[in-house]
Every structure is written in structure tokens, then in C-alpha cells.
Length: 155
Image (cartoon, rainbow, N blue to C red; front, top):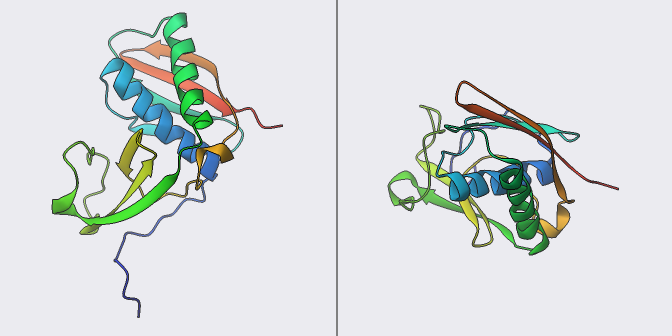
């Protein structure tokens, strides 16, 4: 028997650097475009993709800015920390729309420095210095969905 919080189980084996990069990308998209975090993501070690609801496709200059901002956060060597809070104590700026209906009463919040915080049960790096540079490899926009594909430039 454990004395720690009771959380939902996690059914994925994620690659922590890529999953943490997804958090940074999500915050960047919210900040730049006022959209929601990606509700449809496929995160893998070699390449990943996220979908964002946007009224128009980002310009080439905006795509370059997304990439620059994500890499600035990675280069900042921000600590990635975890805290546990009761659902009714979650800060107002934390989006809980992706929580499953059977989510536990205690939630795990993951913070990337002062840049991002979200409820997540996935695996993450301890510091952004563990993440290789981020590169957007392609994107397309159709019917209000911008799909971005990205990778980490590991040596």
C-alpha cells in the first residue's frame, strides 16, 4: 500500500525529450495564435505531429518563429518539475479539457520552467537541456486544422 496520490495509469511509453518538446510547442501555439493546445498528437522518437485548430495556415515567417521560440525554451535549460494537486485546486490557467472522464481526483501538473504548465501523466525530461534542437519538417492546413510535423535534431 502506498501513501502517495492515486493517479490514472498511463498506457504509452513515450520518449521524454519529444514529449516535453510537445509541451513547449503547445504553449508556443497558444501564445502565438490564441488556439487551444493540440487535442490530436502522435508523439514518437523519430518524428511527431500535432494538430491545431486555426482559421488560416501560419505563414512561413510564423512557422520560423514557432521553431525559434521552441528552441529558445529548450536552450534556456529550464527545469521540468512535477506537482500533485486536487482537481479543485488546479490554477485557472491550466487547461483540463483533455482530461478523460475517469480522471483521478488528484492531478499531476508538469511545469516547464515558467513557460508552461499542464496536467499530464506522461514522461518528461528533468531539464530542457536534455532536448535536442527542434525542427519543423512539414505542415499542411485543411478545413481549419493545421497539422505540423516535427523532429528533434539528435546527433
